[in-house]
Image (cartoon, rainbow, N blue to C red):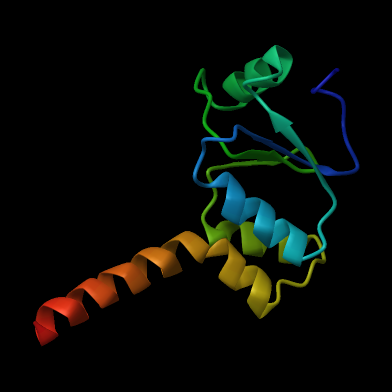
Length: 119
């Protein structure tokens, strides 16, 4: 597969153990974004493409947009801004999905603090 050819879809490069992939894919799905996901651990050409984009590093998630621009390990805000510039609407559920990891950690910390406070 030629990963250098332009694609009408967003290409998301990642691998299953990357903690950023789940929330990112969830945000894209909630916003009805059409994308292709490529696991760089299963595709050597894709891994080479990611290294080329990221100065030799296999940093994921790496996204390649139809206009040729890329985002590597984007924050929720960066991804939201790019998608909105492309005409996608990022609703509250998509935003929450993108922040899922932060929300879970925040709730865990809050519960731990409350437990300490009341014990």
